[in-house]
Image 1 (cartoon, rainbow, N blue to C red):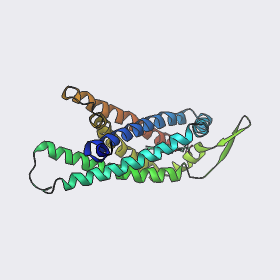
Image 2: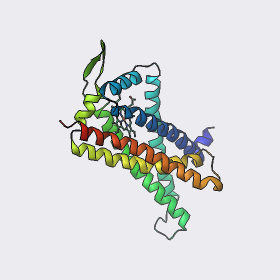
Image 3: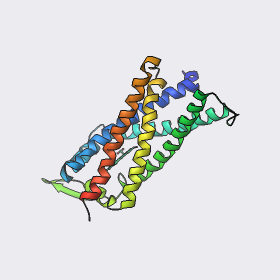
Image 4: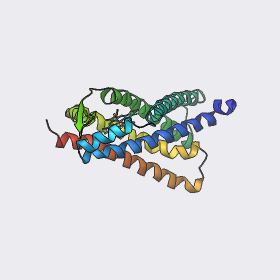
Length: 220
Ligand code: HEM
């Protein structure tokens, strides 16, 4: 078992599993957040429900663990890739070249996402705490926090750019999950590629619509 985890295939398997969990999370997070189009109460009650149910600590800590493992193994695999190719500038056959380009893009987009997630958590999860009351129940006013944050056009632009980067990362990442978990076959390659493209576009577009909508509709 330890031998498998130390091998490149084992590391890719764990990358695939953690990537699967994170891809599922971003989809769920994006769809839940679409409640912003319904209004402040729907959005805040959803946030309250998500953070006050018994599964929340487990989900939250699993996310932290998956992100750490995913980032750590991504860096490790990139390093191993580099040391396995000492003649990085030598002329290579095209498949090897495209693998290198893909992994370079992934480590670059992944690094931007890491910065995004840290600043994102600082802004929202650990940001200003406002309260609002609905029918005698006090809940956190995340909607107010979001409207405040997205009043700043520079912040909206940063989100749009980061979310496009997330789309690029997801497009390659989601297709790779199948390979990493051993579900690939040349016959399915075009389908797997399309699943990655459609998933990435749906998640990125769903998220991008939110800061733009909040900026345009809730002008201070
Ligand atoms: C338009 C884009 C987004 C908006 C408006 C948004 C909004 C929020 C808000 C309001 C919270 C705080 C929830 C709470 O504490 O109750 C949150 C938490 C979080 N968001 Fe986002 N989010 C966006 C995109 C993303 C993306 C793209 C990712 C990952 C790549 C992400 C990852 C997270 C994580 C990990 C948490 C913490 C979950 C926890 O409580 O453990 N978010 N987001």
